[in-house]
Image 1 (cartoon, one colour):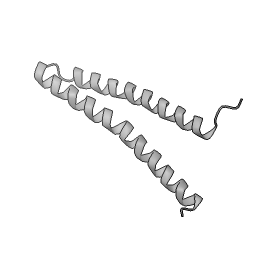
Image 2 (cartoon, helix red, strand yellow):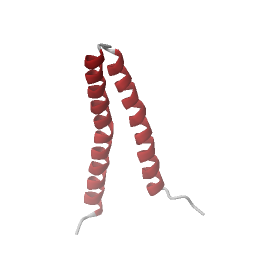
Image 3 (cartoon, helix red, strand yellow):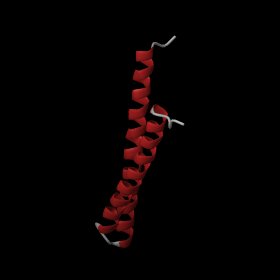
Length: 79
């Protein structure tokens, strides 16, 4: 049986893991796609920068969604 402190530890670790890949995956994918497109179209560094900007916007939206869900779980709306 898990103690409450151990469960809290694993929940915090899970949240940190989710936030890590939520930030890293879009940044890596959009940056690599922008770099590849720059090489293909000879537009360096504009598509790389566009990819990074899109990654930042997407990451921000995903983090807002995750934190909103987490806050609703912690403090459910009262009726």
